[in-house]
Each structure stands twice: as C-alpha cells, then as structure tokens.
Amino acid sequence: MVCHHNISSTIRILCLDGDDETIRKYQDCFSSKSYAAYYAQKAEQGFALAKKEIPDLIFYDIQLAGKKDFSVYQQIETNSFLRQSVIILVSTSVKELQDWIQGADLPGVHDYLIKPIQKDELILKVNMSIRAKHLQDNFLKSNQKLDKALRYIKRIKADLERANSESLSGRAMLENSLRQISLIIDDRSRINQKLEKLSETHQQSVTGMVDILSAMMDANNRYHRGHSRKVAEIACFIAKEFDLPDQTIRYIEMASLLYELGRLSLPDKMARKIPYDYSSAERAFIRNQPVETAALLNRFSGFQEVSRIIRHFHENCDGTGTPDGLKRNEIPIGSRILAGADLYDYLVYRRKVNDLHDVFQLIEKEVNTRLDAQVVHVLHQYAKDHPVNSLERARQVKMYELEPGMELAAGIYTQSGAKLLPMNTILRKDLILQLAQYAEREALEENVFIKDASSSNG
Image (tube, rainbow, N blue to C red; front, side, top):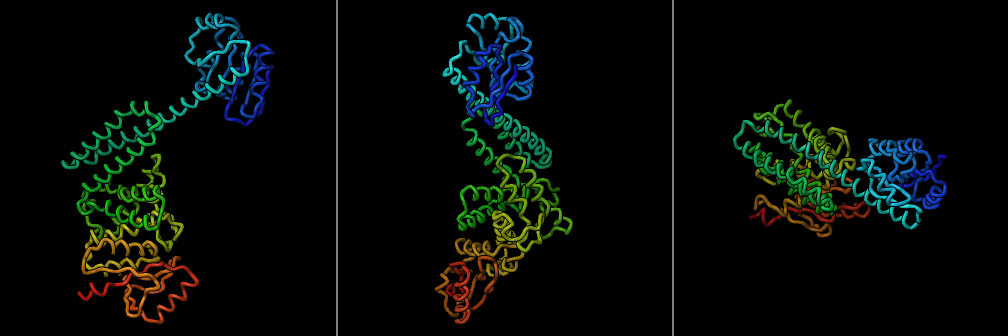
C-alpha cells in the first residue's frame, strides 16, 4: 500500500513501516497542515517515494526489508539527493535494534524510536530532528558562502601579485595585504565554530577589504592620493543632509571608496596621468571602469547596493549618460550624490581651482544635465562648513530673510530641479516677491546661500 497527503508545508516526512496499525498512528500524528506526510509499507516503494519527494525526515522500520537486509536502507542513506534527510530507525525493542545495527554501517542515523509509538514522543522526535536539521543546513550554507568568498580572495591574491610585481612600494603593500588575507583564511575554523557571529565577522571583513583596496588605489596614483576618501567624506555629508538611513549612508561611503577600483588594472603610464591629460580613447576606456567595477563587486554577498551605486556613476540627470541612459530620480540617489562629490573634489582638491566662486560657476553649468540640483544645493552647504579659502565665504539665510541687494552664492531651484534664479543674481524686490509667490505653489529649499558681503569687502 502507498498513500500520501498533498500538504503544503516546510516539514516533509516519509514513514516506511509494514504494520497497518503503525501507519495509522503516523497518519493520526501527521494529519495537521504543518506536515506533508508520505507513507509506504514496502521497501522499494519507500525508496522510490524518497527519491521523488526528498523528505526532511524518514521513519524507517528495520523489519521492512527483512531482518538482515540492509540494502534498501543503504540505498536511501547513500543517495546524493537524500543525504540531508534525517533518518530515524523504528524497532519493537532496543535489543532488536542493537542486533540489526551490528550488521550495518549507519553513519546517517540520527535517532531511533521504539514501538508502540506514542504521539507525544513522536511529535517531540520530529521537532528535535527538524531543529537539528535546520542547524545543520544553516551550517552547510554558511560554509558554502565562506568557501566561495575564500576562492575569490585567492583569485584577488593572485591578481595582486601580478599587478604589483614592478613596484617595490606596491610589493610591500601587497605583501601586507596578503598577510591580512592569510589571516582571514587561517581564521576560517574559528568562524565555523562561531556561526552566530557570522554577520558581524562578515562586516568586519568587508570593511577591511574596502580599506585595503582604497589604500592600494592611493599608493598606485599620486594624483589621486586621498581622492576616494575625500569623496567619501563629501558624499556622506550630503547623504546625512538628505536624512538617508544609516545603512544607505554606509553603502554610499563604500561606493565612494571603491568606485575607482578599476584604476588598479590600468597600465602604469595611464594610471599616473592627470585626468584632464587623457586622450579621447583613454577617456572612453576610463568611462567604462565603473561598470566593470560594479560587475566585479556584485559577485560578493552584501555588495549589491554598492555595485548599483557605482554602475550608475556616469548617468546624467538629462538621460544622456551611461550605461543605461537613466534620468533624474531613475538614477539611484547614491549615484547622484557620488557624481556631485566627485566633481567638487576634482575641482577643489585635485585641479585646485583657486576661486570657490569659479568652482561653483563650473558646477552650476552641470545642474540638470550631469548633476542633481538638490545635490548641488547641499554642496554649497558643505563648502560653507568646510571653507577652502577664508576670503570666499557664503552665509545661509532663510527664504523669508532675503533682502534687496543680496547676491546669490548658489542658484535657487525647485525641488523638481527647475532653475528659478542663477548664481550671482543680485536680488531685487520684484524677484523676492516672485520667489514668495512661487513658494506658495511648489515647495522650495528653505535655505538660500548668500555671498558674505563682509568677507568680500575685507
């Protein structure tokens, strides 16, 4: 006889027993929707059911195939699809069970049950066995993830050895990186013993890897030294002003530190060039680096959002960017922030444009084409809080504090990005009135940046 219940449940149970009364007890115990139960009273039928249904738990009557016939049990135990199934032997007595076990190699047995079967004991066995199976499954999955990460680390190790073979300073840094990677590999057994701390350990490893790669980028290019960390500082400032969640800010910070990771693969001559000295062919090659970097990082668990931010770094707000031609709010907020922070750092700290007024003149030209207007607005706040030149300061006033004669240090935009007044506009009564009237129809930024007259006069 073969029968089964079509139940949708996470606990799948196969009962192999030649006794009708025992089968009825199983059916009574597993009638709840919490179980998907299958029953067989013949050994070969039971094996066929096991291969088809792949149960979580198997109750196996040792008398099912004969007193000393272990073949069916061994077929179940050695089948590659059934190795994760928990097997519980069922017998009429402990002595019978001991005699039967002496004749078989039983590495897959997890527990046993003595007839007559009691419902409470049976349910307890199921719960304990399933709990043990879940722990074992989680352990195996964690181990697989760790194996994958270690294989990738080994590939990075080999790549780093080749990439830095020509530089003594690079070789020293590589050796230091390899020592840290070796410590991660040697730490594997301890991580396996403390699975409950896997998430924390993974985060520490990610942070360490980000720091190592960021340091390598700095060492590989004098012109870009400190660039990624400065961009990360600016980007995090903007993200906090936008009141983004802490985890999102962390993703933006990681993306800022890693978005130029592709530079490590550049030829040495090209890697040491100043960006505005690149040829058109070199610029096209560099432009594709974020996509390749994103594809690389996307292989790591936990880097998917970081990868998405980096991939869309070269998107433009007007839809003319790459790789997907996204527009405005279609572009991830982290990518828009990163683009603004990168340009500000490039102009102020790399190209060293001396006049902050000229910096924002260049930035304002990119609003609503390359850059997001709201990001540029917060860049003015960053410049105010982190002045580069003490003679070039702006102060922040509320919209209702505007007065005729004030000169705008930053353009005024709607929250949708439409420009109302450009930078350097000298305010008049009629312009202030128009702003007030517009604010009644559509929300405007509450704060406005005004050139500090006292600093200019000084």
